[in-house]
Image (cartoon, rainbow, N blue to C red; front, side, top):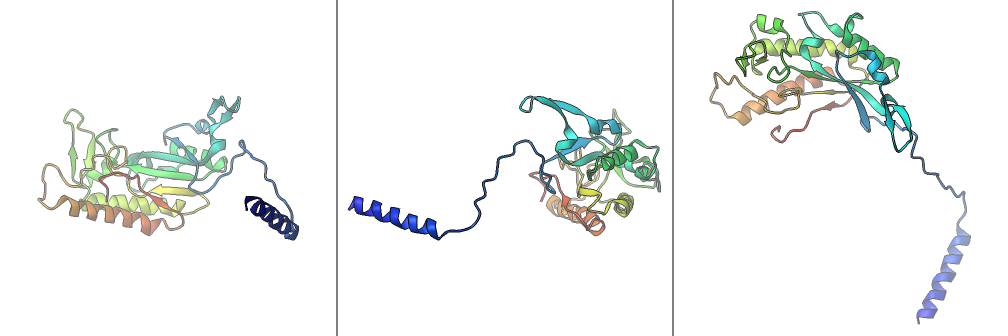
Length: 246
């Protein structure tokens, strides 16, 4: 019985092979070429206060046995920096000024043929004064987490003055970068420590409203998501996932 089955299978396989026609393709394995896909692979992460020569940074890769440029393996150039860097004075937008570092960093990435990605940080508790002073001069409420650093002001997220100027910044940024050919993605959040959603303070800690914190959180996330989604419409918006967000 076993012998009969083996012979039968062999005959059927031979008949099937004769019936097949076409071209046999045997792709070769390629472990060295770089194939870029949108929102896949690495981004090259930089400060807006850097020098455009940063985009030419090289590293020795033992597996390849040679020195390579990091940018050759990147899908986008990612700039994460303070609101103050983007917009130091009301109506002044540094990315439009050829003399500024942020303009030169963006231009340097574009000259390399890669899109830009952004995150805007306004929290003042961890990196110094990230929100520009003109926002507070206009009356935006804020708190200071450490009295030893009185200049490290963090805006109260429900404050209408803060929201007015933040929305204005995003509107201006979108005028120049709501373009899939220029921009890979934008972080549509940027709250909390490092703009990563850590330890977000959703209301004035010195004057709590007594409202349910989850309701306050939902309102803030809805507001900031709306600001970005109404202005950036041609490419994906991202949010740095954090366990207490959403």
